[in-house]
Length: 147
Image 1 (cartoon, rainbow, N blue to C red):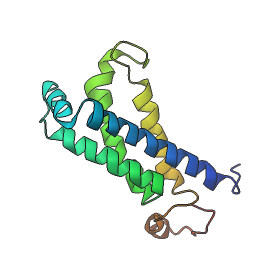
Image 2: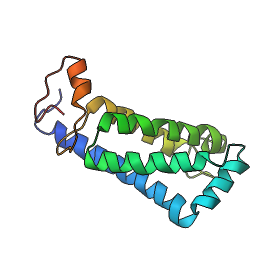
Image 3: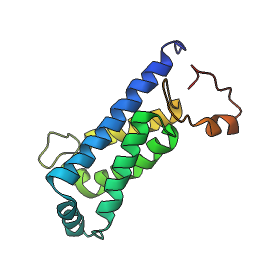
């Protein structure tokens, strides 16, 4: 049984953690590898280098939206393709465990599953812009603690 008193706070903790992870990964690309270096890396994988800018933008926007609780369900869903792309293009060939050389697909897979869980849970407590339209469309009541 789900404890309806604490569930909104659990969703909040998950939401902020997922958002912080996106901002950390975007910061790595922006400040360590640099946007140009990240674009060059994407090109070395056979992708258009411009795709790197799309990925960095999704990471920043999803991260900020998740932390602030702005359209949480959509922000969580938007981040999933980035992680699936990382699994299928970089980490998948390295095996399962993330401690493998070049990192395995364990961490991005768990992260993607956590994003699915966040999308299913909803906004949680203290969301600035709740995803209420999703709840209305499915006929659910939206109270302060039901998000």
